[in-house]
Image (spheres, rainbow, N blue to C red):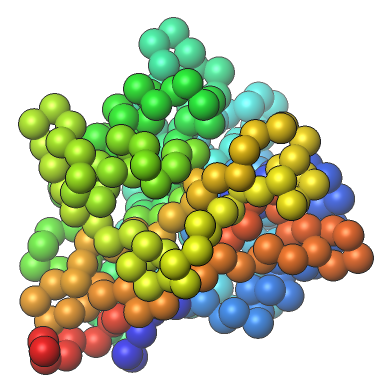
Length: 274
């Protein structure tokens, strides 16, 4: 296995014409054929094995893992999910720090280890606070995420992949922290931003007014969705090879979600440097 193909998409829970959106999402995933997918804003009922992630995965050959971030009530949960072509060995879900006194809409980090042909791959999916003025909350969240990755994905293994809806632009301290450009409480990390490293050089907007579902909130065009990888390692595993914005076109006026997705290809097999 030379490359890992990964995709992140905020599916916008069941808002808008969900059944039509579901059909488009499934067709696009089948066409892209990613090995690993991270989904955000997934609705799941604790009394049922069925949820939005399993509906997306149906018949496409994926294992599914869900991690709750917010217990809405009546057994309904809101969170993140992983779709994996490979067996899922380990699953963890951690609630992230929230604004003091605000437990109405919590966020989480979902972690799985998958048994891929290239070995065990640590894969993390998250969705950070959405409010424009909540950079201080997101900073606490990214610090917690970095700690969980450090504790569960040793540098001796395959470089961990982190993706999701970060609700923060590339220039923000939250994203600069992951890219090694911002020190947070005396700590620093480095993850390659796949679109920055291997994209087309464009702005890469994933929340854009061209999408009528996003235009409803009257926010500016922004790049909010990312695929990060802590790499490359000395064998060049984890090197971003390609990245692009996907699921960004409508069918009969229907967009797949209010966010566009990000697809990336990451080096999986060791190869000689230089």
